[in-house]
Length: 223
Image (cartoon, rainbow, N blue to C red):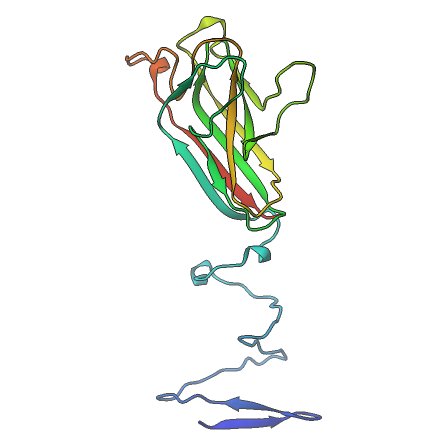
């Protein structure tokens, strides 16, 4: 292997070492006054661009700017479920939930909860939960229940027609441990509360008899 030794202006030297190769190769230097980039050196690049097709590795989450999406997880269900508790908060984590492990304690978690159908003839309210604890609920006021959102489509005894619910919220869990998000439900009066179906769940081709799907999506956002 041949090499070229360049003495430093005041001391030391730089050795340009050529590897053992077959054939002849050419290394072209640009006609500019600049600094070469080293493979293992810590340097800041300027005026450079990288084509998307050239990105074959990964970028550390800590190097991404605030607002970047670091990871996405989803929980879904196409099944139906019911419960019969009245004026009592009921955890629905066994019906629908998703877990995420933040990469940084400062990360935010963007939650998208979509319930295809939720139905009780007296109306239903729900609240988001993180690790079983309520988040994003209304202010306390007397004995009024505190919730994230309400659904009153079945009010006045309608056992067929019902709506879905959609909730979005940017949470700050302040942890790097696995965290589970779900929701609790609360019905005003007695009777069945149904998810992904109507109360009667009649076997016909009417829109109110449709079965639906529900999902919860969690996105870690760099802060």
